[in-house]
Image (cartoon, rainbow, N blue to C red; front, top):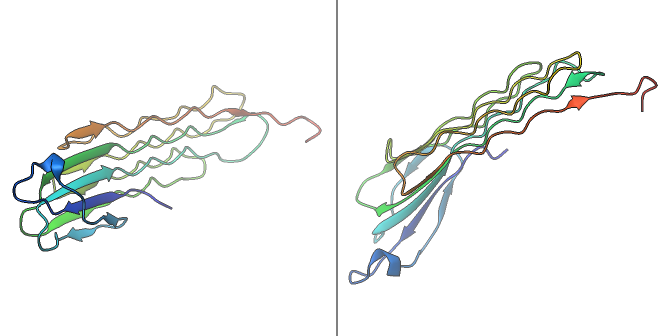
Length: 171
């Protein structure tokens, strides 16, 4: 399961170059919460965050007339380029939402870098499936746009669940 990721890309830039002229010297990927300390000589970092995705809605049983649960929303995305500075940056990785039988899906968690430097909310869980030839269950909203980045994007919404129809004689 890959719930969320935060990528810190340290790049040593020559003193006379503008940030756009630099090159990345290494990549660091985080899939669990922790901290990041830039290596010696790192002048700038590019950080990308993705909030945890919402879980799809659950169903209580698979039977004729059971509507499938709606899809969970995607976590939001954010990206920021900044001076590395001295010290250590905190990293929180938002988990994906938990699925529950017969219930709405759980919401995804928020991923952040440096406390409030870059924050990316998780997606909302999908609605549970219903019975008796119901209306399809709704997919639910993606995470609200990230905050603090140069690029901030909302997560995509989950898709609608569909009705399961089983012929009277089975398949």
